[in-house]
Image (cartoon, rainbow, N blue to C red; front, side, top):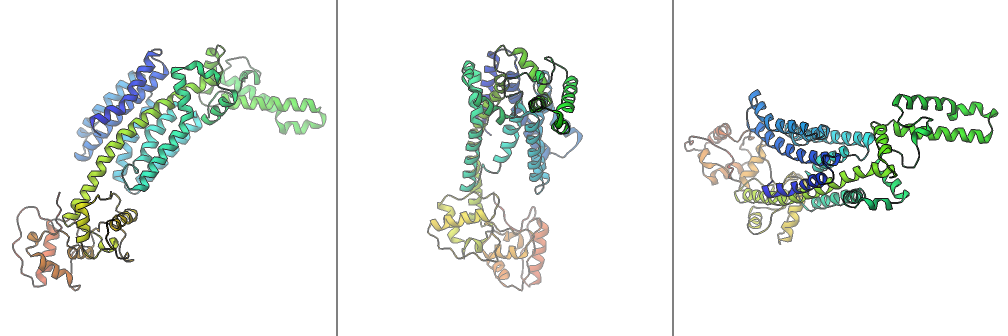
Length: 488
């Protein structure tokens, strides 16, 4: 990512830090905004250090050097009061996840997806739409989903647009309320009970979504201890549980039975809310600071502000990444253009071509598709572009692999097809002219080697086969040799 894109992605965070600071000093809002800012710095540092680890030979000294910058950032974040729980997710996103994808290309992505789903599910169950959950979603889950959508054909582009639209649609009610809470908090008093109730349910928030004293429902005074809450609920449950009332039903009046069922229902609801991790402390703080303000607003406002800040940051970061993705897409297309024009191996039977000339002409004068996975979807997109350019394509050979670029590594017949399709070969290393090599490959009784490393050993093995067929070879050059010529 260029420096301009980096600055653009940091801008919403700097504005959030400034707004939080001017609204009341070092508040929880400023702590959250500062944590996001430091998390962005930490992610950038971890990504850079990971590249250094991959390029250098692993040792304790290298590990020490790699950990210096991230360690300094974490130390500063700790003494600045940033949330270390949130920052720990940056270690996974920027360091452990890329390392797992590189080390385990097959099972790594599935393990990463399972970990993210488990983390988000736990955060939702334990805290609802809290700053921690919002941080996980916008800093870990969504970037991981976007990884496969930045570069690709129309299908990926449409999927990416749908993802952004869905996230904006789901987050907009909370983000709008967060923006109002930041700049015009008096407007929140106009929200109806139904609107607050819907937002409370949607955010899985606490405390209660109605105007009642939870402690009174348990027969306790305000700010009772957690032990007293459990003891009171157990006593009410033993006396008024519906199963208990069934046994006493012959001796109970209908009015008394209804009253005891209602008492149990209210106590059970109060206990459920107060027993959530951290919920009782939040509820007590809200009751002390309410001063006539509905407790639902005091609970929802910080959650919604977190959503608003992270949504703006994510959209700004996505916009800057989009610019970089366009540049990377151009690089991928140019790499394919060089591959075609430099006689790189192509799967002509799958493309529906009998020779290289049409695709080389196409590569000279037309925009090429983005080939990342070299799979069937990209093959069909390339065939569509070739047809639109006026090329008459043959039906797909059912025996051909559904790829654009045919791999010659480990496949002797793939190397034969590469030679016969005009693919680039290091004829100087083989000591033979191109026409003689094609004549040799055209005879199905002649053997070719499965390429292993495309190095001097492969060249020596191929020269041995050519000499065994009675061909007179020139001297082998000194230095680095390749069998299949690879041009930058």
